[in-house]
Amino acid sequence: MRIAFAGTPEFAATALRALHAAGHDIALVLTQPDRPAGRGLKLQASPVKAWALAHGLPVAQPRSLRLDGRTPEDAKQARDALQAAGIECLVVAAYGLILPRWTLDLPPLGCLNIHASLLPRWRGAAPIHRAIEAGDSTTGVTLMQMNEGLDTGDMVLSHRLEIRPDDTTGSLHDRLAALGGQMAAQALTGGTWTYTPQPLEGVTYARKIEKAEARLDWNCPAAVLERRMRAFDPFPGAHFMLNGQPVKAWRARVRPELRGVPGQVLQAHGKTFTVACADGALELLQLQSPGGRRMDAAAWLAAHGELTGTRLAAEAPATPA
Image (cartoon, rainbow, N blue to C red; front, side, top):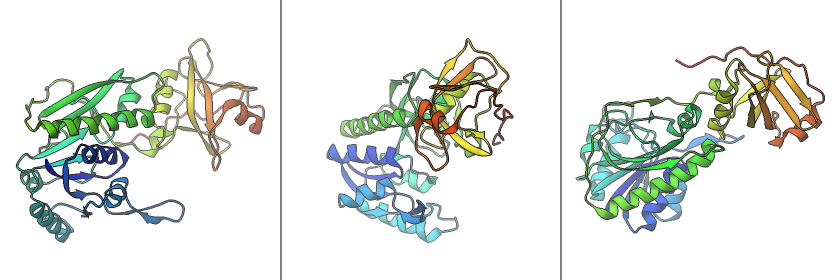
């Protein structure tokens, strides 16, 4: 099938690779403009752009696709390029820009979105993070015919995937990305789709991850905090404050048999660093100080001395509206 592809991060690049490997004719790749990154804040191409250029695919980077927006010239150039490409379908994966009506109507087969959840659960920006944070046992990928709503279009194909007890957003992301690419390649090769409206029940929204959420609130149950640590790995990284400095906590074990005042360090010597929560406690297994690397609790404690009895701040962090 002759297609265009729209996506930006590594999740999308994985799908682009799968479509290319399946032999689909990728006439145009849309991705977001280069962004400053790294310590030097140099402009950096998205994973999708880097892969597309390395494989000789034409790339466009409009700042917006809205013909009535702040950059109508960008939108017009993108529209002209899509029209000239003669595509049958536009495949979208984590693009990051709103697709206006003209975009949805342009390809004869419409726009097919690869979404990392079993819709209608976890519509929105951060479905992988929110599934882990909520304690879901399963998630999956849905291929959806896009409309003007937020992930509300009819479903073309879906596949369920187990969330493992030790999954982080990073590990689950990689499995979902591979699955999404396989599903998109399969759907386009088949060429005929059955459209199924999403159920009206079970709708949830996966709001964007904010850095303020990543501060551990010891007034929460230990199991909730353990899930948040995995949900915020690799970004933004769950943390707590110690001596005015943020310490990231990457892995932990729930200790329901232990009790104490929330935020109280119950044990912090040798190989064990345990902090009381609203119910039970968390045994922190992997930590990272500012400017340092991830290390196991024993190595981290060896560098920080005796902390047993210390009270870590337990007030709730600001929650975005």
